[in-house]
Image 1: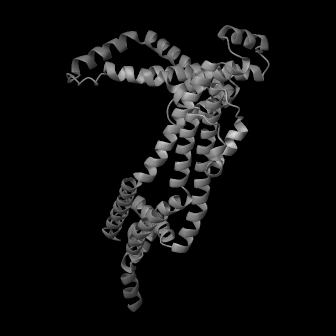
Image 2 (image 1 turned 180 degrees about the vertical axis):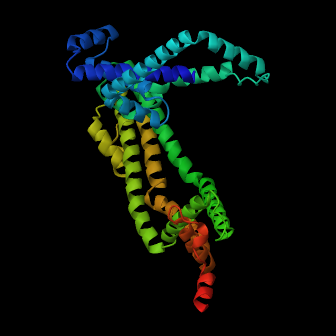
Length: 397
């Protein structure tokens, strides 16, 4: 089913690129009456029809992950050059196939003899184990994931559709989707804050492992011997982590940058969650027939500790407002920076230990010597670089 999803993504991306570039070079022009007829057929407004079409097209053209949507955008942007490259590629393949056919016709008897000799002298192939087949449960799960892709992504398109929708059924669908997206964002935020320590611990252990392997490789190297293949990689790792840990152990710089980055991060998260809550408030008010514009819902959501009582007197809105108010107080800026400060202290402590091991005098001498060994000009022998003791002995002679 993953192959089916990929095929649908490629076909949709190709058709979308063909449609957009046909408009760009004035080859194709879709009249507005066509959109109007589609809207009448679907019993939707023109704005609803366009947004639903965008949701479906973007869902099929984006695929899963981060790089596939990015690749789809690049493909659409460079579509004429892609077509030209494809034409050259298939033209070269056609020429090669034609050449092979001419060759096979000219030397058919000789080729047949060589094939027979190879078949007679070829060893018996051992049977290979077949690849495990995808179970029916996995196929159903992948198929459902493919169908539900429009509902799991493109949050702001759903929010925009919630604003302009006129049919109550569409408002209900948009409201449920936006509430699910909001719940997933809140769950992800709480998951990071409550269960960040195991990930941080694994990251610190990974840092100790990388630096330890780099130190062992550099310490085990003898200046007169041929350098191992991974010596340059380990040397670069030690250099990189020396710079990183040297910065992290500086309490003044780290604390100042933590305040800057932490403030920006907290502000972005707070505004994003408040924005999603405002759409939920607006959608519930529309369904209940309460007078609440989206601008007022956004202001109430941004300043929920002050304007929680300004929401319409609807039970569902009161419950959601209470959840939002509790979330804003519990995960406030004080809690966020307290969380950040405790983790930074642990990271700084680990960075100080690693940096101390990398700036030791004995290791630094070996590190400089290995760096000189790796920067030998092409064509010279590694043994031409003298060691410090050899230089002193030569001067005494």
